Length: 162
Ligand SMILES: [Zn+2]
Image (cartoon, rainbow, N blue to C red; front, top):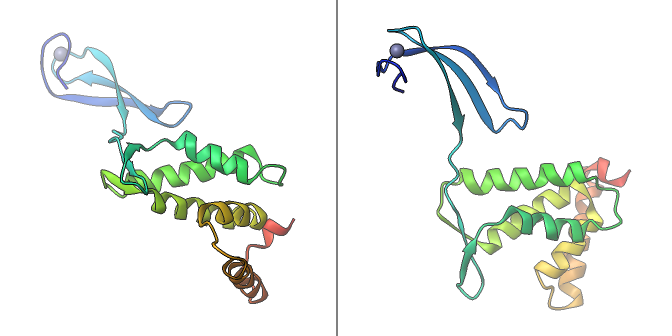
């Protein structure tokens, strides 16, 4: 980073603090040559990620869409807006950290299911029934039975029963 006064490229960081939303870091730097101080901001670069839909069409990955379908699934359930925010952030992180430029919509659906399953079983079943389009009652029952079995073995999330 070139000094704005003398073009020297060497500076030292004198102060460094995250912004309120935690998404950027503000650094106060001091030029090693002339002592001039200046500020830089560091931010994670988000590469745009494309979602491949079932019909092979592509669209930009949109966390707001994820939030929308989670809100629908959690409607009137004991799931707070904060929990949904957190879940959306987890999904965003998983999508961006995979370093893939394209991700199948199924993968995002699976991530949503994993989050919902942790948060609230009813919301999970609601989402899964739409998303997986259970073709018949027996596949739906299979999923329910699997959930019940898991709970019996104590693997279920006790918090979701509150
Ligand atoms: Zn300088």
